[in-house]
Image (cartoon, rainbow, N blue to C red):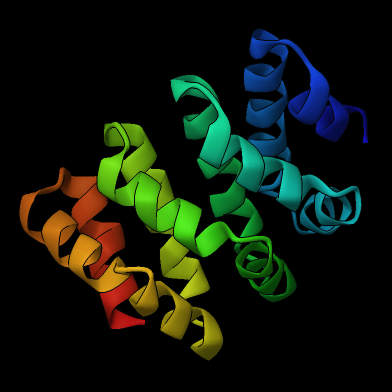
Length: 147
């Protein structure tokens, strides 16, 4: 809860660090559940939308790890994450694009999220990344198209 609070209300630097720690913690199944229960998904979606460059990158990375849980994937979509992540995959820097595409790849396993991704213009973004992106972006975009 402290890290979620810092990611929401901290200084610019605290938000970057808190999102980075949440990203690392979200590599563990139990932590994924705990972060979501503490309101972390909504905070990270907001940071991915409204943060500075580093905050967006770290938030997208945290969401990628959190999305490796089916309930969290649904919660990310419900929190408006699909539109935010499609925009980041399209317009972000290199790291933001890869992390957003990776999150969307995980979200695409859910049929409702797949429809939302397509409606938000995700297919065109994935095709563009698969064609013109770096190696990581190509891999995640191809995975999202496959799902």
